Amino acid sequence: MADLQMNENERGLFKLSGITGMLIAVVLLLSILVFLTFNGIMVQQKEATNYYKINQELGALKANSKDNIKQYQLVGNK
Image (tube, rainbow, N blue to C red):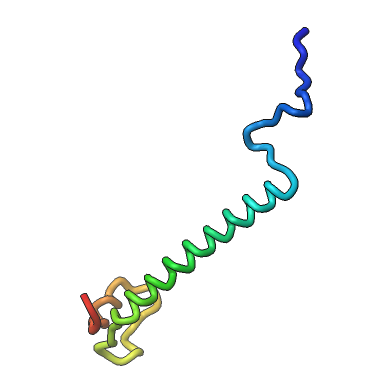
C-alpha cells in the first residue's frame, strides 16, 4: 500500500494558513471592494445626467403596463 500521508513540509496549492492566508484574503476582499466602489461611482456619474420627465400625470401610469414607456421622455444625455 502506498504511503498517503503528507509530510509537514509538503503543502497543497491552496493551503495557506496564519498571517499569509489572512493577508491574501484581506487584500483580495479590499481589491473587490475598490473595484465595485469605483464602478458604482462611474455608473452614478454617467446616469446622473441621463434623466427623464413624465409627459402625463402620474394617474395615467399603471403598475405593470408595457405602455408606461410612452409616458416618459428622455431629457438628459443620449
